[in-house]
Length: 305
Image (cartoon, rainbow, N blue to C red; front, side):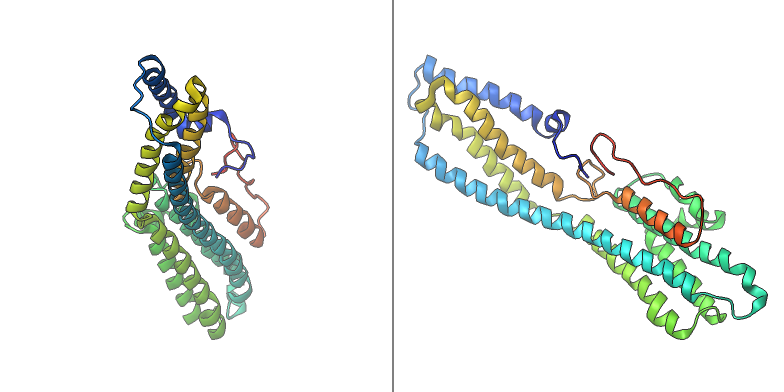
């Protein structure tokens, strides 16, 4: 996620640098055809091109609005995970207590087990959404047996949340949790995690309808290729810088929409899932009363991952 207010030149080059070079060469070619070789019939009426440009701009606005809605829904899902995680940790420390004094020494280890497994769940979901190939980040959060078992799972986040629900049931049946707290508290939190996970997986697996992206990009390029033939007759060589600026505006806007519609791609416009997971870890480990707390992730080159 870009958090810097100004856009770096390197980001701009990554987004549209190659196209700008093409516009310069293409604009020069059109000027040469018209002004040097006097090919007059290769011009178009400005009014018609302007109407076409307005139509393309409306289509771009619609597509980019839908792309931002996908991004915001993804960020909202992770906001829900943050809130539900804090509530879940509070429920664990408040609801889970030994039924007799002989087991008091086990309270801290059970609380830690549940909260660390939940942190593993959040990081597994993040890694799945970004399609990472290594899962070593989960090792410090799980037992060796659980880490070996989870390595064979297809949907690791779902399996971890399922294990969590099974462990809570064991604690309930052993008398560690009261019935009301188990059914209407802890299991409701498990349900909230599944709901937010399902939202993220739906966004990841269901792209913005490809016809929107394909035709929007196609119409943008038709407009860009026709534009210099409409303004060269009025502006002459002065058309070149104006054309480069106008064409860049359209393609940058289209490219931004294309990047924004994939909020879990792992790129620099991604939802900052790594930072969110770290912030949740800080909160939950503080709720456990731990003193060794990791620092929040820092912004690097204007980007928070």
